Amino acid sequence: MLTQSIDDALRVIQQKPEGVLQSDLWKILDVDSRKCSRIVKKLIDSGMIERIEFRKNGIKTFVLKARRRPVDPSKLLAGEELIPCIACDMECTVELCPRLLDWMYQLAICEASE
Ligand code: SF4
Image 1 (cartoon, rainbow, N blue to C red):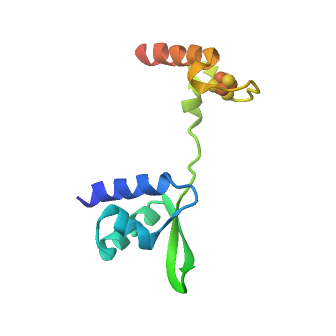
Image 2: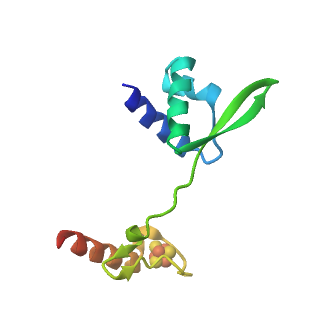
């Protein structure tokens, strides 16, 4: 039960790059503030989020922001082939990009042969 709430909280926080007020998070999650504090503590302890002190109408609360995690370089490779988006300066329509589509086919082939 708490694990599901932690996942839900992380999803909510990750969707808002500007952060989420802790005083709003427990309402969004439909949990009480005590349970929300436990969820937030777990996420902070695991390094997934950071908590920044904030005052709203003179009342102290916290802004919760997702931490950026370093990209695993292996996720950028299809076999030996680096994802084409790196250093790409083309006009971008991701859904229609033939270079990216080729790379994704290559990735699928590599994963199927593992
Ligand atoms: S999706 Fe295509 S056009 Fe967009 S950055 Fe990647 S390679 Fe370049």
